[in-house]
Image 1 (spheres, helix red, strand yellow):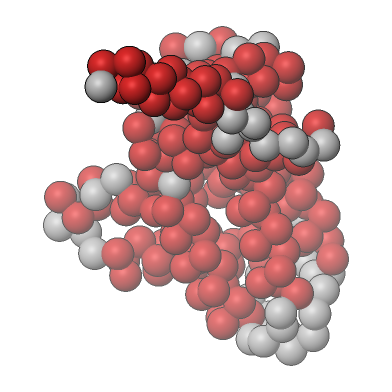
Image 2: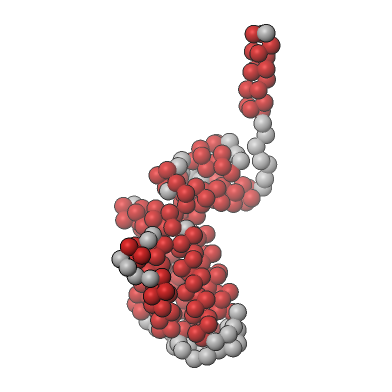
Length: 218
């Protein structure tokens, strides 16, 4: 009986060792790792995970992680880049959807707020790391520069006067802070309703986009 048990145990260990990991092209493997990292960062936070856990979540052996990323910080920045791209893709899609200026601003405010709410834990890690890590801080500054360029392009496409870069940065920072305040529960704790925040986001969008009605797409 003991011999049989040892054989079964040995077979199980062997199966575990030889279980094939997912076979994908390099681009697909990297994408799977970033998606897994995003999921974990947004549930456990940056310091609540490591590269081994990320690789396992994506369906790979731990060593696969280092084929694509040098360390956990590098994949965190890749997740951040994807996060920003997703937000601005949503913004552009809403601007192209047409409708009145007021309706567009309302959809924009809600979409950006929900994006921040969905990724609340990830955003908390981003803010903390940006304050303590020079690499993350520099990446965030570079990202904001690209966001300002995107804002400039989208505003020009609407035949609206483009504000100064300082004003666009101010509006970007205000929107970030307001959305994070709602997502993190700070606004509610201070007795400020979500609807009040949405109105402020709407005003910020109006300052950038103008108030003329538009039924065309950009």
